[in-house]
Image 1 (tube, rainbow, N blue to C red):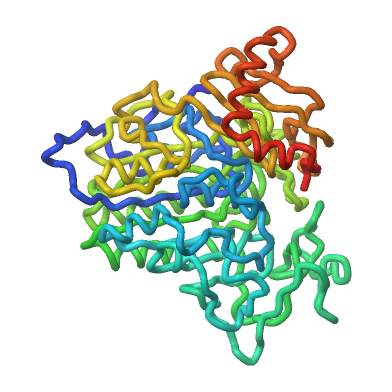
Image 2 (cartoon, helix red, strand yellow):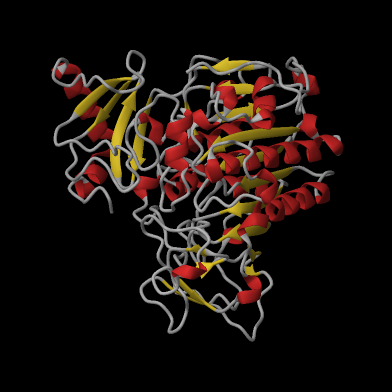
Length: 514
């Protein structure tokens, strides 16, 4: 993996040196941008030559590009749970891919990263992709929804309840569905359709995007979704304008809080399915809707940075750009993502094995860029950093109290680019309830029953025997070392069982596709 370090014209702000401690702002703003299903190979600053992301590249070239950063999990809900709570998601049995009507899985009484910021005088907001549940389940979408993101530390929220491919297809602002007509109430069901409501199976002529697997439910905006929905016609989003919609909310929040410290989580929906970017990005990548969605996401990043710059607060804002998990090309729709990537030689995994849903490295090995104008020198880091460590690291950096007992660990020097070869020693990896261990350069994946591929075609890391891998010598994980290194395998297994034993024992026989 050879990241590009060439300065590009869009947002090229020039190399900057670290400021002295006396110049360091006491309470910098924090803008946390999390893309959805974006792989290392989708970003040109990580070496991609098939997709060009000049705005992401610009903050990477003038900031800290981490080559050894990880999410906790290979899917969205558990990954985001860890990011906000500082806890491994596999310790919470509800932290798994959620339907659109699932209850909130973060206990409102538990400590969180946004609560810590809020308690220390920061204005906080969550805008965009959520997928952590709302309410207590069996929601009435026509009333105020609580608990919500507003009860776990965010002053302002404007969110997609789950994913773009799940109903209800509405924006929820501060617990209320935006634009809802009370005479056309919303009904949602994940088991059966409502009489007469069109679905992909009953009314295929209404689809402008066809499903591949798992998306046969209610058709909204010509796109079939997971689950069934009735009503709420005036509140339903239009996919093509979603990026602009959320970007307007991001800019409004930044402008409204330019004179006070803020913590802003900006959850991009790209390039998660369905990939329906604005028409002005159509054809921009040459890789179909998925590639165009990546270009749209890059544009959103540039617009957010430009807003900070125009207000004169860019040098007082830490910008973090990352992804929730690894990439996937074919994830439920016939959008030519896999076909065009194969034809054009686009590898979203950057040579790594696996992808979203997988215990192999591409499932959790993600882009991670930290940009702080005037405070972080342009550099490339091989330090090992996990998203779960954001909580403790930010707390330590700003001098705030962090609760005992978190899985989050502080790595301030790693986060600020002062240590380029340190960080974590161990991490439990998770993919749809399956667990593995990375310790140093080695990865141990215990035996799991079930097939090793799912409907996406991605290898899941399921073998009927324990496997052992060396990520330094074999980053593509093609040479299993378990037979040749029985003593190392035994040590790794003992450490794995010490760190995650009871959780592994409770679930390792489960169907890995569930």
